[in-house]
Image (cartoon, rainbow, N blue to C red; front, side):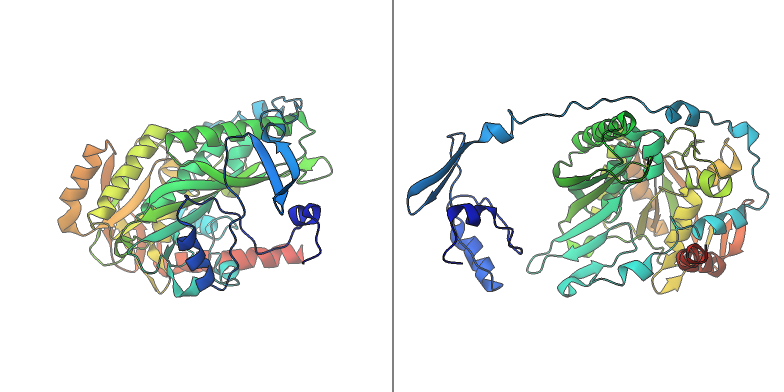
Length: 443
């Protein structure tokens, strides 16, 4: 618009625009890319060491603002912060008072049909998930993978947050959101690079909410630094509540990773009968905040699973080395629902269902063996001939490794614990979300 004043130009909120800072001398390269896609391109300024934002029109300065006013010297809210009273109450969880269910197969089916764990195809199919035909791995695996045309590279992307963990312990919940995202990315064969966050909380005028907010950010920060995944962007959404009832703190983490050779990407689904199923990582009796406790016992209490960031880094390195060596037939992280759910999800490929035979041993409760949500774990499958290579990789990265079963057959069999047809397990998972929506609509 030719008659706009400098004031209007700078404050206009016209859409479909992006501001970029380029390395000096590469302007023509950027312009060529923009012109190729039919976009406008203009060099409008340069970075200086003046400490000021200087805006000029026709070589006349029309605005000059010290940057410090919106950075170091900006006003800071010091809102009251206090740990909410519910924290002490939710710490009280006595597992000994909770019986282990007799039919663990039925428990698994209930978990698979829960709103959290059931298939979400009906949602993601509603938007364009085939981005210019570059999508290599559709939504549904640990991470979506999109090729970068003209190169051998691809980007892996995932989003995670367990708001129950964040309700029970915002610091641990925030850190786990980052760690799980990095685990998802590594399971796809990609190296975690960076994250963006979407921080959703209740009213910041409530000291308890501010405490949740502060602790979640501290957890995210610690995990991001430790896993070398800087926060490059994000947003904050407050006042998410009805009356005095706030949403669970939900600091959602989106992460991107890089696959140098797209042909080496990995998906979560078991591939061939006879492949060996391996558990990487240790399973502990950690049922606090689990989907099992919430869905089966109706309890949201206890402490979330512990997070050892060194163990997480070790697992990520092992996964990346194994994918680079090309020995992983599949890889899937363990998170909500624990080992049994991760095994089931690995059976449910988009166009087929695999059965498995697994044998688990351990000194912990049977329900914890199946549904504990201990962190820093992944289920992978390999050809039997590559088992020795995987063992060496696990040992060199200090990652516990257990061969727990094989792919094949029509049953989802965990000896002595669960024995159901794999197709029945899939039916519970595939119909659970829509059935939940229908029940909510009736209510």
